[in-house]
Image 1 (cartoon, rainbow, N blue to C red):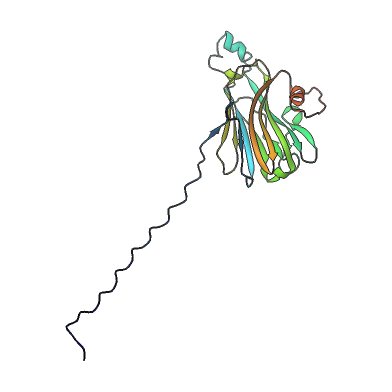
Image 2: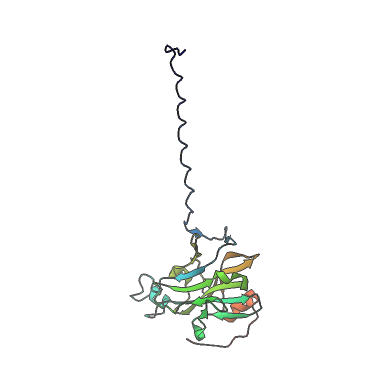
Length: 228
C-alpha cells in the first residue's frame, strides 16, 4: 500500500561548475639592458632560429650643420660612419671575420652561419648581423664589434646602441654611451656554453683596428690592410 502523505526526497542540488583554469601568463618580452653591474644573460638551450644584431647610431649629432666642435667631431660634412662586424670561431677551429671591409659578408646556411646585411652610412636604420642559432652547435664564439670607419672617434656623441633580437625572447640592449678616442669597440661576446648561448656585454674600447681586436681576444689570425 502506497502512503501518499510522504513527500518524495528532493534531488541533490547540482555541484557548481568548476571555474575555468587561469590562462598561462604571457611570456614577457620587455627589453633587457646589459650593464656593467649585470653584463651577461644566457638563452634557453632550446633557443634557435635567427637572431638579428642591430647597430644604430646618430651619424650627425645635433649641431653638426654649423661650424665649431660638433662639426669637427662628425668629420665635417661626412658624418660618423660606424661599421658593424664580428670575429667568429667555429667548433672545427675555423676562424674569420664578417664585415663590409673586403666584402666579407658571411653566410647563414653555410659557415660561418653569420651574415652582414650591408653597409649603412646614415646610422638611421643601422647595420644588421644575423646569427643562425639553429647551427649553434657548430659555433664556438663570436665577438661582435663596431669600428668608426669615418669621422672623429666620439662614441658618447654618436648615441650608439646595439640590440640583439633572439626569437621568442626579450630584446637585449647594450648602449655605447662612454667617452673614448678609440676607433674600435668590442660590443658583445657570444659563447656556446654547454649548448646554450651566453651573451656578455663587453663595450671594450681598443686602440687600433681589427688586428688589435684579434690580439685582445686571442683569435690569432693574420691581417692585411683593406678598404671598402
